[in-house]
Length: 139
Image (tube, rainbow, N blue to C red; front, top):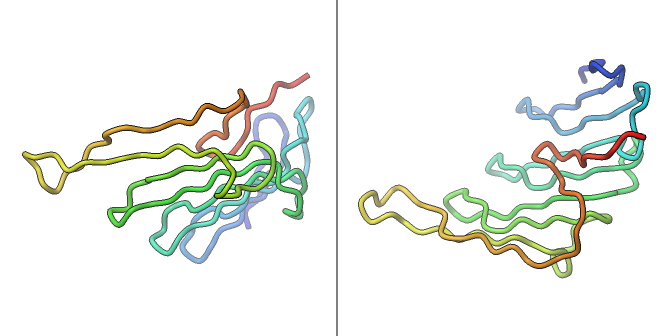
């Protein structure tokens, strides 16, 4: 575990797996004026080393899930579906998802291109950023 203090005075403790990938970002102390709704971010990886889930927690013990992002991949290690829950854990049966479709390019059989991404119509909500942190306004 490595502990760092960011420019806002927030203390982060980073957890790593045996391959050196970040698996946790725990906020033990909040800096002045920082919203404490998100206290821990957990990241899990699949057997190919790709991000499987990014989970946000409201507590440092990783008990209460506030939001989650989950990805599915094809055999070429391309993201084919991405689920995003802004209210708790992902449930693949009910959580909205974005689907991605790929096609081989005729001139380069080993090259693929994104054909389309299908985004479902859902209620407006704040996104989970690539790092798994939900932007929040500071009062």
